[in-house]
View 1: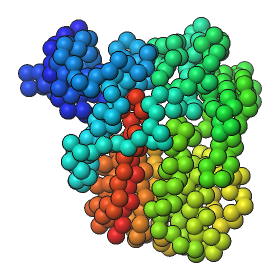
View 2 (view 1 turned 90 degrees about the horizontal axis):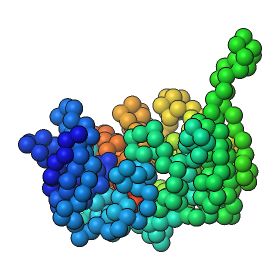
View 3 (view 1 turned 180 degrees about the horizontal axis):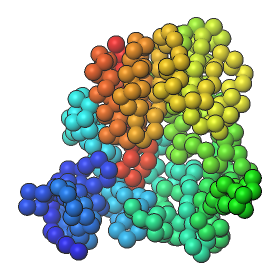
Amino acid sequence: MTELTLTAGPAANGGSCVARHDGRVVFVRYALPGETVRVKVLDERGSYWHAEVVEVLEPSGDRVDPLCPIAGVDGAGCCDLAFAEPEAARRLKGSVVANQLARLGGFTWRDEQTAVAEPVGAGEVRGWRTRVRLDTTADGRAGFHRYHSADLVTDLDCGQLPAELTDGLAEMRWTPGAHVHVVLDSDGRRHIVQSGPKVTGRKGSRAGGPKSTTRVIEGDYEAVQRVGGRQWMLPATAFWQAHRDAAALYSGLVADWSGLQPGMTAWDLYGGAGVFAAALAELVGPDGRVLTVDTSRGASRAARSALADLPWVSVVTESVRRALSAESGRPDVAVLDPPRTGAGREVIDALAATEVPRVIHIGCEAASFARDIGLYLRHGYAVEELRVFDSFPLTHHVECIAVLTR
């Protein structure tokens, strides 16, 4: 395996820094800009190489002792910025978003030197996560994947996780190949659900297809989550914001930025369990209308239950693309919170065709968020507001929220 001594350049999207060797770009994990590092090259194929740090020869002043004891080279892939001073990490994240917006979206947010991701809640970088999914080894131990590997690290002392989430899990044994879902709900109760592995019934029987088994190990299958005085009951296996303060923060921003008045219409696309729909419904009132759309049947069930007292909210279980094709008229605001891959051209083209005057777009991956912003700009929208949040401390991930108007 090739080893090189390199000087790390600026942070790249995805958690690496950009370095160069003989004119070739090398993406280096576990380095900070300006550091001189010895690296081992993991992938020499193609025009870009990928490497990870073996030794830091000249450290950055922003390097600290790892804030996650199990992350790093040969460790778990959980906290890829655990070695960066937290404020420096937020600067790195802001610079990456600014770069992606300029390169992929054609939009200048801020100078990369002044772009900074904002802390969430009180800004703690450890113990912020309220839910985690673990995989299991052949001998039934729960663990985290190593970076881009099927191998698991069974030490569960991840910096993101509070002790009350993981207490006792390392000593427990699980069905090999199963997933272990652990949730701390809004009351501080822990719920543990094991799902899988898939099992196959007898050939020729009605149960012959693969089936996934689910067992409640601790607590309940559904966990209570509260935002804005409203309560949701969600399966431990379902999606909810991982950071304990994120759902309330985003919901408040969506309400503040929506510009809605009583009697107006709002669309909540990729709406999940309807947290944003609830906030929008309070603003438009009984004379207005809110449409919330998601492909997940479980999320839709949770939304219908939580929002049952708001009959002007329509919950649709469908893809956003098909839901848009079935809608007529123009909403006053559309809120989109797509998956990591972004909304994409087809959805944004369809949304722009409605001539919706105001869009709130949320993205948890900088490159796809930037590409989506570029698509809006080509439809004549302008960015009115844009904020970036350090919603996943100790990692390279961010959450971006933009308001677009035309």
